[in-house]
Image (cartoon, rainbow, N blue to C red; front, top):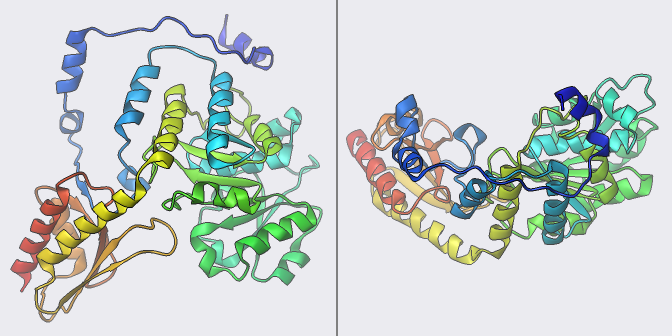
Length: 403
């Protein structure tokens, strides 16, 4: 069957999965792959991650269970829709939502979620997005001014316009027959005047779907279902941060009718805004395994381990004159013990930028966060066992040279 014939028949494919005999590689080939250092071969720098789950640093490292799930499922075929159905049911049960689907990250989840809101189950409308004029589709998304930090691009990709407000009264005045969605950015929730609960209530009052972006907002693990329980219609989260799933995966969870509609804009269907947002079978299963592992994990033990690592680094450097260390826990986003280091440059003669460069270019290479002229911060939750002692030693060496 030609590719164009397959595309024509996507709408009539059965939902039941079909597995085909796997393709294996020889033991010799496995051995060669295992010995091959591809980063070294490509000349790509690797480093100790003392900064956090930043996308430009490739997020987090996948759990071994996830890596094994990806490897094992790479050997057989299945139908993509069937897999998303089955995995979505499992994920929805875990996060206490009506439905869920694995997306190509949180940004993708937002675009697809809004596309579903706009089109409903009308396939003609699905194909028209993002060209909304003259289609009868709504075209505005309301958001608080304090939540406008760039991620709304995922929403304007659908052709919608952002309408910014500050107060509940302004929301009431902004709502009209073009309003498609009320969008909330959790990491900026302290920068807005309207609370989560008030936002959800406004949506329910006017029968307008509400969506929340919680991309980096676990831990705590309870946030995985907190906002579903609160009443948000759609919840979007990254998979490659704290959950340590595939970096290119995320979750869209929420009301079943909206998830069903969002999936009409997802692969394997063509002529849609989301056709390029492919998530392969290995990533879908990897995301499910990562989520399942994460909710069952001993988070108290992790927290104690992170605190111990921070203490090791702090102890190694806190005796330098004019230097102070303090452990803080962010209220929103990447909520983990974070070590802040500040110093008086009259006593410790190095800028934070130079220190950052020295650590980056050293052996081992280390990435930290530069917070100003003489202020750095670091987390330990993305470190591997024993790396905290290497970070402590390198920081000590750099500060010793600077005093």
